[in-house]
Image (cartoon, rainbow, N blue to C red; front, side):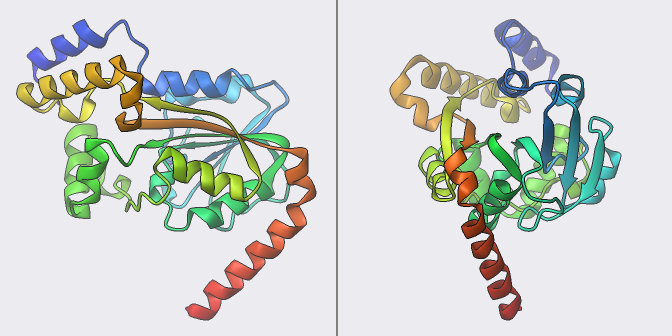
Length: 261
């Protein structure tokens, strides 16, 4: 928890601003319709700020861990694997991945599954850390035990919430490459830097983070080193026509993986 002085500075400098979670929620909510079926992939326990149930017909939550059973912000939840989603073809209008892609060991396999479960003209929204930001670089070069400590210290969460990270699709270029290869068309890639939450444990660290935030937000040419990537992609009609090819690729990848076990 931040000290009173740091908390006061956060309130003074960032209080009037929309935080990253609300900005991401608004990005998604602007495209939701009352008849939409939404998949919240990697939803975990969920959070009230990104509760989309009032804006659409149904929100299915899917997560690898049992935490999905504790999520009270979805219509229904199920345990599942991002590389083999437990859903039929073409059932969702929107897929949301909030801080999930950094945990994908095989992002190309997940991308194929997203194409499979999305309807024609379906939308994918994601928020993920930018690999070139100082927080992500520190996380990449430190052990998992350190990540668990940070999660417990800053978020008050259990160790189980600190999942292993791979950062294999955490630049704007990599994101675009992985999703366009399976036929998803980019709508928007937004580089976002908000309050330095991870540095609120000490005043000097927070002040350094504050200076960094102001610098990278002042100059567009520094957007590549902002903390998060917000993105959205569309499944086109042409992609839908090619679904059979993608399904053959999925079957091939899964059978090949099974032979290696």
